[in-house]
Length: 223
Image (cartoon, rainbow, N blue to C red; front, side, top):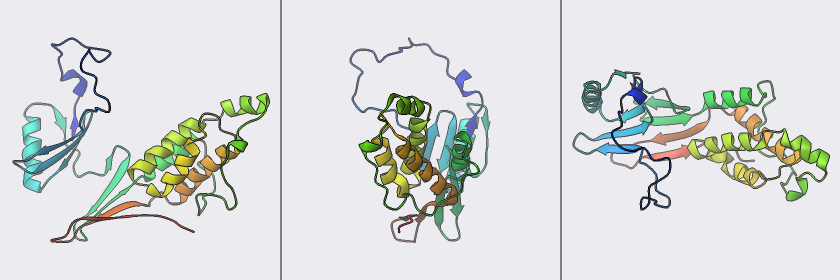
């Protein structure tokens, strides 16, 4: 569900602090975005004005009615894309798949790699990332400052922590050189994106069997 013009539905009658007031600071404290309605067995995932409702049909209908009685809402139907994640639910097979094909396509376009050839493996054979790849001359440093290395590594990190654990290690290694990346680091980073281009429909799949805990499978291309 989506809340129409959500920013207009919260009149403020309290002071607004640009910084946390004294005594409120809590290291590591974050606002929750997952809520549980125990009575009706409803799980809610909330991000700003987008809400993902997880329950049986009766619970979903009840919650939609309750929310719509207070706010103007838009019913988007069964989930398809949520926060850049494509969610495929197969009730007959009792599976839930999470992939990111649209997000990968956006990255390819953002970094002008729509026509780049895909690769089968994350890393090139015999290539090891080291600090020796960092720029040595002022000319090399000037050229690398124009390269969106940190932006691409950050975009890849989002993939790695959502539904692509197969790239997590390589992305972690690339992030180590974000302070002073060289051309070799940049080539390795673009290779990860080329790899995702050829495996954009891969991701995580959760399976459920009656009487058993749900299990999950992740796509990992080893070699």
